[in-house]
Length: 468
Image 1: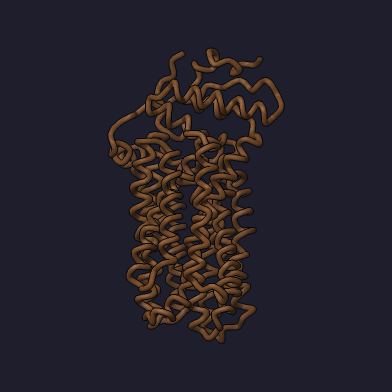
Image 2: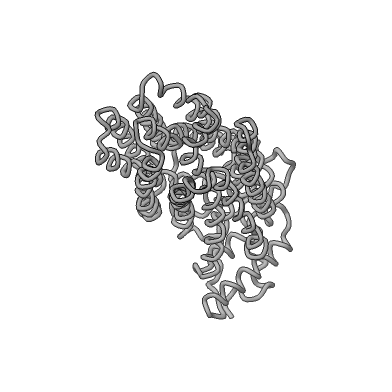
């Protein structure tokens, strides 16, 4: 057997050294599919408001500002969920927080189906947002810690690609079901995938990197032995490559707020300020636009089914966008792809807004909309890849969670600002504002971002002396 086939031989190596030497196998792909599907269902639930907002607005007789408040309620919950889940996952582990997040959004989606007034619907959407806000940073942290560095960027970018797929699926579901069963029963349908948590309980391991840094060395070794055995079985071979020594990062088990202090330490302070700024402006622009695509089309004179159809059609541009980003992040690097997608999305958003102003030509709307979603969903793929790479294992979920939480603050403001700006400036002003936000985010990455392509998570953290 090669080195690593016996527990006594591998215990002298760190979790990162044992994980990084593993070839990508069917076992890795199973983990990816399970995490990505959970991400898909969450994204589908979040995106559904884009397609249902017009019907809900009409049923409850909401003003544009009130509709904006309802649409933003999920993002308020996501601020809370993302902030808490990161610290919980860095203190108590990735897997339990990931499981409970899915249970919470499943229950909240069911409750949305029972809402009889806008006040209770808003409350339930906040609960739904807390569940979704908890899941997103944990999903990217788990995947980044289980996939070797040479494929890490591609897999996380592909995971994020399940967001446009969820967006399209939400549109298709609402297009066919909304005229038949109404918006309440659509929320009921979306609660069903919460049973998916059972698959996670059995197939997803706790992160060995987290177990090791938290001081649970024996448990980390047991999990690693199971992972190594399943990789061997998946590959149909009895040996694995030998581990290679990597920079070691000190174990930092601590109290609930240790990770929060760490992301603001001198080493990580600039990274934190940079990524918080990018998430804030990128999501302010993105959700200020996309959550209103269907409603704005209806405002421009399209029927409900027409507006849903065109919104789904436009969203299809996101599929090649995230696929291209998943390829480029390992060829160009995270930083240049992030800048290009943000700038491209900004230009196309501006053109989309102007096409709506000058006659609402359908061909021009769809073409500029497709290109806008191509760049913006590529942007999502890069941000989800880039963010967890900036922090050490002891603070990765916290760093990712707070970055997403700041982004959700931008989402929240984007919804409200759009509701206030649209009556005064029309679609042209709304999309020009979104374009400006993307340009600011691109400038921040260009000036202050670091490149992480091809480096292990430990190389990107503060190393300590390795002793054999």
